[in-house]
Image 1 (cartoon, rainbow, N blue to C red):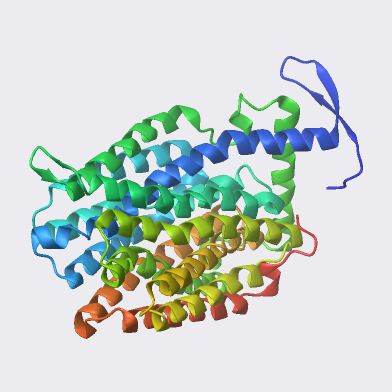
Image 2: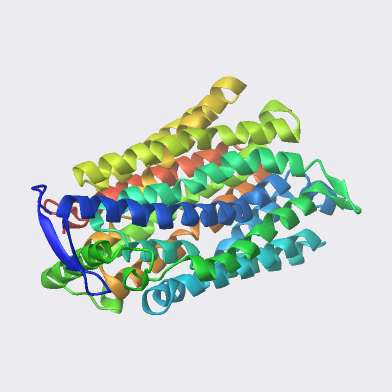
Length: 449
């Protein structure tokens, strides 16, 4: 769109016309859409990650209470992603073809109920089953939101929008780690703190799921809260983007799933998530062993990498949108994360230095996510993009099964986390290499549509 001021004559729904500078309409529309949607989606994702990763904090007490080994805890943490895997592609397609609002509401209500159920497990098999069900319940949420954002934000604005939404991920740890530390200290009605952790953090998902039904709007055409001239502008922009993709090449769903860059992005995301979830789940336990501090102090230390992560992802998403470059903006953060993680292993004898490298690792990694998710929507649209995003996220998140499970296995065999962390380093470097192998057409737009 030209930056030259222009005036648009648009007709409102009541038949009257208004004449506003085109640039002013663009500014108002972008800000109004962002203010309406992003804070609410941000809140939903905070709740999602509190419920997904609270098992890491619960692992400070649960093994002792239930007699679980590190292998059992690691497998139970990872099996979440097997359930998650099953409904990712169908969920993303449902958002594209049916209703994001109703599907996201269903997801939240069901995962909230399953999270509460985690408080009442007694055996390893119950632990595995409920974690699997939590994953199946949440499946489709993240790719559904990524697809949903393509219904409201142009390609030029998408990395910033995803960065704002994805900021909920690190901030959920910043909020959730101290909160989990406090909840672990509870003992009510004969239930230990880790059980109350699941109950108290599961209930908000159900409540927000009900609110989602009336708050979210599926597409701009249905937005009563958007003035007519702003609605016309965003509808026109998104339609032009779709038509430009069709002129270049229109992919069918199965053709898109076999596309070289989609396969590379899937493998890249798998390796990245192996490293990310391996760190995220086991970090409280690693810091507990290194420091010997109380559960509450350990959870405070575990929150530090995610403070840095919030800053990194916003800056990297903004700079990627400004330059319209994606591949290097996604690859460099995972390379830096891998290097910092290796240095954390080498510095394990020095608590302050080791924690410092974990902070660098966490801060670097989260610059990867918002830029990465802008790539598939660059060369795919509509159902092809939805299915591909579902594939990338579902297969990629199996890394969330592999990372914690392999770390638990290696820690049990070697009685140390050093070998396990070096495995994650290798996975992160593989992710960066695969990202750079993605075609330049997907990773950069000389003339963004």
